[in-house]
Image 1 (spheres, helix red, strand yellow):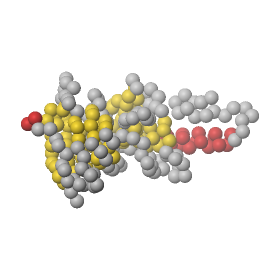
Image 2: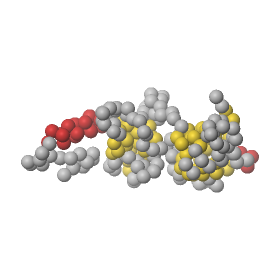
Image 3: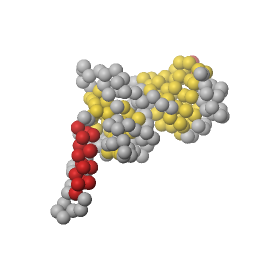
Image 4: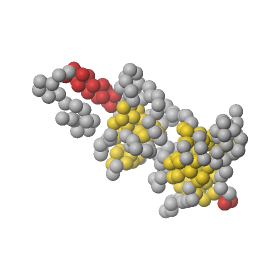
Length: 219
């Protein structure tokens, strides 16, 4: 038997190792007593600090909460239940899980400017789907990459794309992006170079405005 919201194992009569079941339940309760999440993230991170929590925004683990109980344990995934409310520290907003998706709850006076950030380049592999809930993306090209966009997206998205350090790769953008002057972004062809792109969602339309902010940065 398991509990309703967090699916914790319940002890049963004559069960062996009840102390393990009890301790595991206490660790999970302690982790979720402070129900704040740092941010949405594209995939389960390779490294996670004790107490950190992220919501995965794409892939097979989409919408799950990634968390770590102790430094000695691996990162775990929690399946959200309808009606669960979390506070996202990065955006300073509350989100509720409803209709199989995380939806922002608009509440005044909850702004919290970036107490935690998740700044790291994510490697691409042929395809990359832009998360609808993250405002900033940092992509590292490991191959020629087709970039897609989910329907629900923040009104403004910033994307920093870094060229490979060993080879030169290209980008194929989604067809529903309208580029300034009808000049589609072409990735800078210098190793380790970086381009900055902004996308703006149009109301009452499935199109986005694409703007090339700057290209060919390097360090």
